[in-house]
Amino acid sequence: MELSMMLDYSADPRRAADAAAELETAGFDAVWVAEAWGFDAPTIMGYLAARTERMKIGSAILNVYSRTPALIARTAAGLDAMSGGRAMLGLGASGPQVVEGWHGKPYDKPIGRTRETVELCRRIWRRETIDHHGITDMPLPPEKGGRHGKPLKMLTRPVRADIPVSRTGSRGPTK
Image (tube, rainbow, N blue to C red; front, side):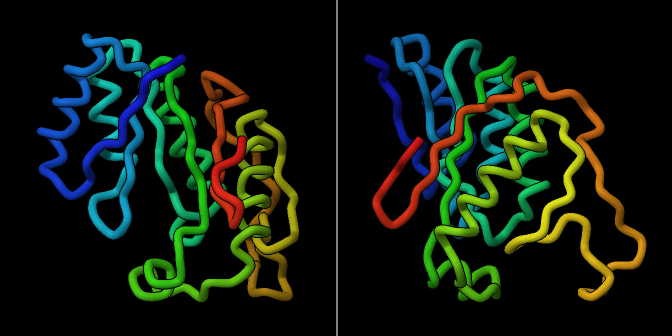
């Protein structure tokens, strides 16, 4: 059995992260960092990576509307590198209030968008050259305004090509 905790995202982020780091010495195995419409989770996760040694650090959740799949994959790979392979990526669709009200994006295709983001993240971490056309186009095709894009693969080498991913859909968390 592993013990984990949710970081209080409405509190002072440094104090909450410092408290989580203290719980590592008490035996806690993981900490989850939410963002809602407050501070971004990856910044706090990076601070936690520097303050802890063995505790796993997960996002709960990064929503798939406010970041592109490539940015999500790069962020998770960077956090995994900075934490020595302790990152966990929690992904989800959030909800219409946050997506439309805070990010100004239409709340469409939440399950398909989440599935596609997970698939693209895994391909990016394996350093595949990405030529994908679905909800997200990588690269942007000419008929959608693309002029200079070409299929790319991740420039840096991730610590792990299989960062753990949890996703939240209409049926709750899945792996």
